[in-house]
Image (cartoon, rainbow, N blue to C red; front, side, top):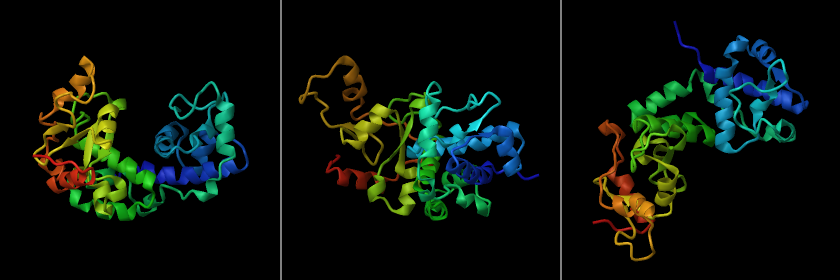
Length: 268
């Protein structure tokens, strides 16, 4: 028995919701289920990828249009303030959705999030192939994020913290400078908490090809550090980062070298 492709269902639901937004209306779980051939109790699994995409790409909260018997979104809706649904609805109704390509069009070929993430984690060399199949940057970034989370076992590479909502996938070679292969390659990724992600992107922290963490001011000469700041920066200097368990997921030295060239950082 084949598994259900929720991504294909999301592709169908996306178009229905766009049509509902165009006439400034809402739709119930049962009505949406009937339109795409899904039981209403399973609709939450369909809405999840759509909500995630809108959050990732900062689009209006499209899934706000799907309501229960009381006329409100279900408990899984987190894309907008539930105490101010009116402004959320207005932002969706007035948005130019015709300019947005259906982000789940790739699913019409039988592809899904799970099998694409499986490809990215089991065969990192195929990242360029996945990039070519998925045309929407927001979906590409979601796939990269989820593949990096899986590769790092949901643990920050610098701090070891494991708060799911406070872990972000960071590109070693930035998106703007990366090839299609590198943009989705888990070996071009670090899983970091938001602070270390920012410090890495701003070149306060970097890593070496042998996976040591480097801080730009290891002696603390440039500014006064609090005890907490020092623990999060100076104390990490020259310490080994927490690499993925599987060697095929670990950052490639050439990616690290390219990153350090771009930020003009020389490592010993």
